[in-house]
Image (cartoon, rainbow, N blue to C red):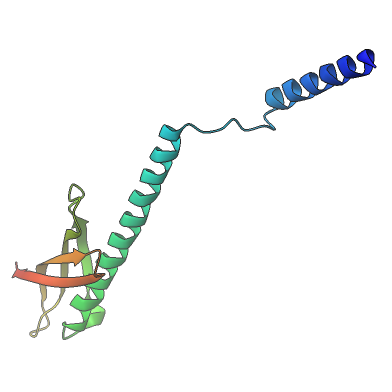
Length: 126
């Protein structure tokens, strides 16, 4: 009986060791690693929401243009340091003006993450 128990223990030990070496067993993550993973996930969700807000702002700009098909984006940015619920957005673009020439403008807006809305705060015609 002792031989069977000892043999079983040896087999189990060898199996576990083999699984760990082959990578089949994933060691538990520490609480720090879990917290970092959650933080990274929240950052990614925030970034995706901001990207969608910039797309929404672009559509708002195009709706206000006389010739939306002439819209050409020059640059779009947001305040990456902003950690609050309101993120500052900026889109610099050009398009046809009323006289058929090209004109460029910069639109500033705020994106409220909690309310999920974009508000244009200022437009500067270059």
